Length: 523
Image 1: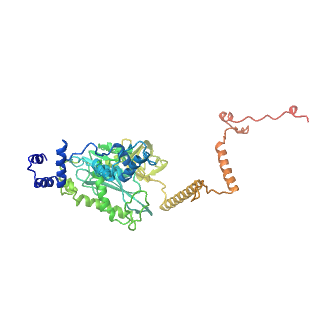
Image 2 (image 1 turned 90 degrees about the horizontal axis):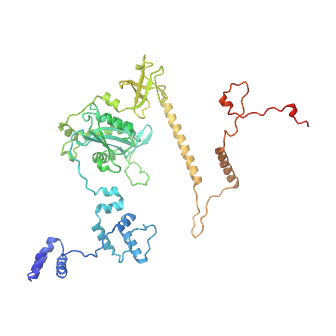
């Protein structure tokens, strides 16, 4: 632009010079001529804006957040404020002072595009989670196998038939961040527990069939703040296995991108093709009808390990430069730290912390008797009990020094028919309680008559006099029952021939002595 000004000062500027400059800058020739005119009259840099340019202020940002990124609504509010000096109902009272004059809508939209980034505009409309998709994240440096594992739960968007009930299965798995290999996986029909995490951890560490060749002891384990992962049992097991635990801050899935990418891949590659798949939908909407009949839990537990095997042996992630996770694992010379499977089993069990004794009825644990054939001849021996959470059908019995003696099973276990009848009875009771709660809610709900003219609200609560008196009497009896003081009047003393402790005699009321003949009324 300075060369154009020099040419113009020497009267050597031609249309060709202006056309070439416009093509290089990507603007029109008219714009270049306007810049030259501005540079001739003002000392400012050609193309620069003045100080009166409209900009997005912090108060306008507050309005944008209030109106969920609706720029037209924010502009209408600014116009209303400038015209009447009042704020619309519900708008923030401390936001956006009056602007005079208010810029046009096109100028306002242009300022939004100039002063706000794409992530900020999406964040105002859809929230911080949507804005995170436009952020830039750094990659962690490439490490070696078993250096860092990531773990998480994922709910499969489908329903399976689990013993007659349609439930959403949950997948719990561990992934090696260096080789992208799935080291351990478990499936739980319904909500997962710490037992799901312990089972997945055992399958991830053990390298024997059918779990190998991936596994060994990890150096670091990274997971979110799920209560199952933060349980004392899981953290104690990982500490006993000499693994460092990294608990990520809340609402930060980008800090465990490996397991999140695996979750996205399994949803699009496997779950979407299975029968009974329920597509995801926006919140606050009823569940959509599944795309097909539900498959059995057995079939689902066969599909998922097969897909995990395909992922480890055939899939080629972009981060591995054309190699499969198995090839990357085998090419890594890092030595593996293995421990016997029996030790892994003992480390991933929960200890109740009490010393128990084997009796003639076996081992008593939580008011239940557990027996086994290996207990023969060992009555009177002191032992410790280790167990898998929520697995009440069996326990592991160990010596006081931690050596495993064997498995004990629940004595007098109910039959399948009894358990089925019990589940049905519990389900019927739950349905009855829900129906009663719903009926009580209907009684408490206030209903009003609809109106078409300005009139006071009219309650639709007509009730007869006997019904009102009966319900009030019932509540009155409940209030008296709550106010009852059973110890206010002491009980009468027991007969004299009873052996009554002195402590109970003091709590009884004395009896009135029988009147003597002299004390009787002569009349």
